[in-house]
Length: 442
Image (cartoon, rainbow, N blue to C red; front, top):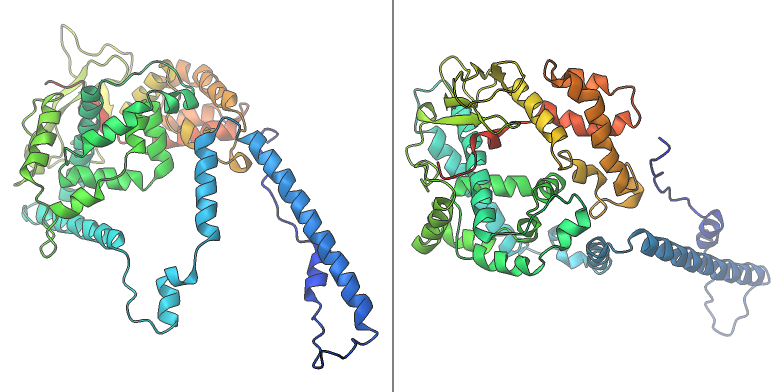
């Protein structure tokens, strides 16, 4: 592709390789003159090494100048890169357990923070065992856990929605990445301070922790939703540590942190299950939700079970139901009235193409902040904005009667087809749990 930056290839300097391969002449007698054959080689080696150092310095200077030009006004990327380079350059072998063990050390335990991170993972395992062990009459524990994770994702979305609403953040229709990141920088400290007064349930923490382990997708999601302040906050591992028992690994936060979380959620949702902190006695068969159309925001389905014996609930692979027919209100969008995961994805794509936001995963692959110039598919952020209109031109006319695969084939022969496929391929895997959340206070 003509617009794609070529990856940098490191070439070895053959002169340098030969020069460094020559063994030094070692004199046993300090008064002994070196042999005649060694002097010219030694002098030549010194000249070659000096020339090599000069070439390296010029190369570094050139790279530094180019790097500064590439990352002008990209302070976050430059600062992070420099900090990582500084850490890597100053790392000591003694900091690695593998090295300490090789030297005969017996005390090679990880740091306290690393141990607490493992403690959290154990708490997740205990949670899973607790949930899947309560309903032995269900077909498999895999199904129970599948529904539970789907419901946990819904609760995480509610948590973020409630948090964003309570903090009253400034938002607009801008898609400029740097503007979104630099807006209201004073809010970062305010949000970090607020998050110290609440602690979400363990299932919400599980989704938060898992999502943050995919940093580019996590970043894209929060930038598109103009909630970068949350991206800048750290996972509250110190508070979580105090809430998890060191022996049983049960999760039991202090009362004030629980109450802070419930009070936050009450500002967004009055649903009883949304306000249930512990989810003790979790039964996937009694859970139900309404599903909204992503295009018109009207109700598509009401009282949809998360799972059922026929495997057609919202958390089931075979989800399929007939659209709600109402005389007043309801969705009138020109799509198939049979609602399934595939049809919801098509509606979501239509809504995304019709909105002012960039498409999901645009910042993930075309970011001017977190993506290195040498490996970015496109080197300018303006081209990323061109992709959406081009996709809309080809896909919107056929979308109401097509599936995602048909849409991907429709752009196969277009300009920048590969980059468009990168964006559209994620619609194959979308599980649109956010369509069950709505706008709160229900």
